[in-house]
Image (cartoon, rainbow, N blue to C red; front, side, top):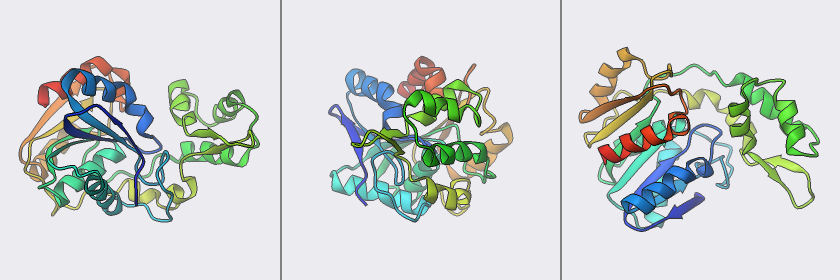
Length: 254
C-alpha cells in the first residue's frame, strides 16, 4: 500500500492523519503554518480508501497503522510526531502502540480510544445519492446533499470528495462501498492491551461529545504520559472551527 501525501517543508517529520471521509487537503492550512513557522516537515497523508490513496476491499485500524509504518519506511522517516483527528486519531493511537520506536510524540484530536456506535448513516446515504446521481455541477451536488444534511459546513466538507473526471462528470474520491461495508470498524475501540508511554496530547473541542470527562481515566490507562487540552467554543472539527487556538495548543505541546 503506497499512500498519497502532500509534503511541506523541511525538518522534524510530522505526519497528520485526517478523519472519516476527509483527506489530506483538509489540513493544508495548518500543515503549511507548522512547516513555515516551526520548521517541521509536514506529511499530510491520505489514509486508505480516502483522497488519492488506493482503494481496497478492507478497512481496519490494524491495516491503517501498518500503512503508516510502511509510509514511514518508504520515506525513510523515524522519530516522527504523529497527529490524527477522529478516525485518524484512532489510527495514530494504534500506530504509536504498535510501533513505539517510530513515534516520538502523539497528538490525538477529539476522539477517545473507546467504541463508538455507527452514527454516519445520514451522511453515507447522502453520499450514496451523489454517487448514483448524474451531476452536472457542484451546485447540483450541494442541492441534492442538502436533502440529507442541513448543515452547510458539513456539506462543504463532504463535497471536497467530489472529483470531476476527464469526461466532465463527477465521481467520489472516497471508496464509499468499502467504507459502508466496514462502518463498524470505524467505531471500533483501541484494544485495551494496547498502550503508548511517549508524550501524548489529547485535544478536545469543548462543545464536542466525542471525549467525555469520564473517558479520561481510561485514556490515562493506555497513554501514561498524557496531557489534555480543551478548546473553548469548538466542536468535533476543532482544528477548523478554532484554528488559531488549536495551533497554539499543538505548538505549546511540541
